[in-house]
Length: 510
Image (cartoon, rainbow, N blue to C red; front, top):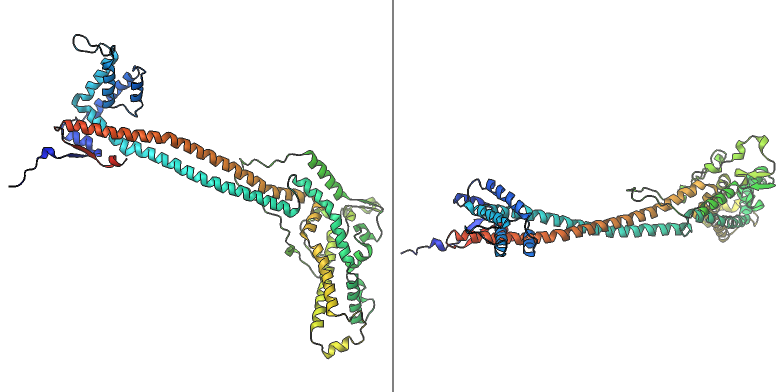
């Protein structure tokens, strides 16, 4: 005989999301329960306003929503009080507050309204309220993570920009405390640099003599080399004299260096303004700038035949050093007074610098060609060509190599970035302003990174504070929902002779 199953001992499993429908289908609750719940909810809101301010009541009111089970707790507290718990001869409560909560309790129990509403509250907590709090907390945690990463990135970038600024200042030989003042102070080094260059050019006198003698011997004319290397010969004879003397052949009586006056004016102006405005980093999102490039590969040399129309070497914007005196009427020029471009030295002026560079290149090219010829195997034609040459022409490869080194020394001094940098500072205040602005950009960007770092720290702290407020709410709602689940299971169990009731689904993993 088959074993009979006692169905009364089997547990009742109800999915949390279908609890309300389950109650209605089994006629524990009515279909129109939401309308009745609204009436009860309105009475609860009115009754809450008159509740006494005692600890037990305050703890109950901290819950997210007052349910039937909270109403039972309130009634228990009120009925235990000697004043509010008094009843008349008919068994009714005399206290109006207790009477109101008693009415609410009766309305809840009528047609098991409390079960339907509690099931709905539990379902809403599991489906909406708890997931929403979880999303808010996850969003806060993501903001904290992103802000922390951006803090680190901005700290690193700020350090990089400050390092770039320090390296740039070091490259130009300044500390960076007062950029413009320090740049103008650098111009004081220019005379010594030009003096060294002048001495280097003067040391080429034997090289120039050898070059001239060689040309005269080859063309068999004693005067043919007179027009060669004009700039080198001029500096050997006259030194680094003024452009006025180069142009007229006579030294000036007075030199008015307008470029030097400009530098002194700028120094005075900078000395009066100790503060540096680094810009509004809060309003600028991006700062685009380009470093000034002193690449000597940009120098282009044309043939010496085009010297009259093209200087041959491109030194950049030199509009401020144009010969202003040449544009003035001859009648207003003061005899013996060098001003404007005439006040510059031949190593400062653009045209004469170009001529000098071309002369140095011509010398180096000739010496290298001559060195290659001497290192080639001796042939009959070569021996016959230099048979009658003097000892001044018949130099050894070692002598030629020494001359090449002298030319390279002069060339290297002239091609120094620092030399060109100082020349630009002296002749162009706008160049100094552009350079100062370029150097400032690194500090502006560094300040911007520091500002953004602080902003990220502020946002991260706000997210942490918000997470700290949300987490207790989530924990409390979880606890309330789990407690409500147990209470509903107990109430349903009573209606089925205390059979075990299990509410299943996602509610068990919240």
